[in-house]
Length: 118
Ligand SMILES: [Zn+2]
Image (cartoon, rainbow, N blue to C red; front, side, top):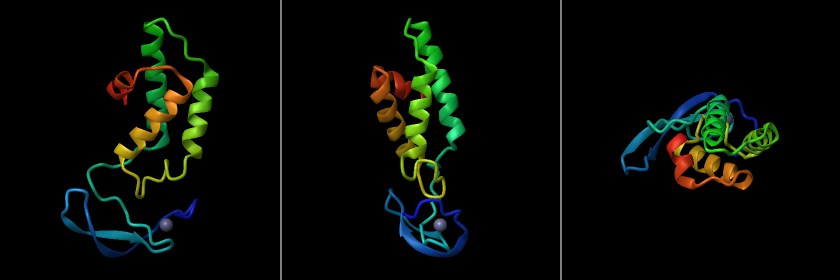
């Protein structure tokens, strides 16, 4: 997966969806990456930044202070994770898993709490 391709729709290709159905997928004409055309669409980085401030609020109510530095570190690691912001192909489920794992590296927070937020 080349980094930084600004993807352009090219001709389609048949591909199998996770549910087993064959579907015509548009490919990027520059790098050939198959576009994610499922309903499980990735979100932009701003969505996860909003989720982080939601998390901060929830934790504050529980008496745990999440610092600006922690938020910055998490946001930076997410944006440095290859493909995380590439909504051409990434699914929300994949982003969600990366998000949960990354947050838990920096903040001691139970997984089910994160699953309820993101
Ligand atoms: Zn591309």
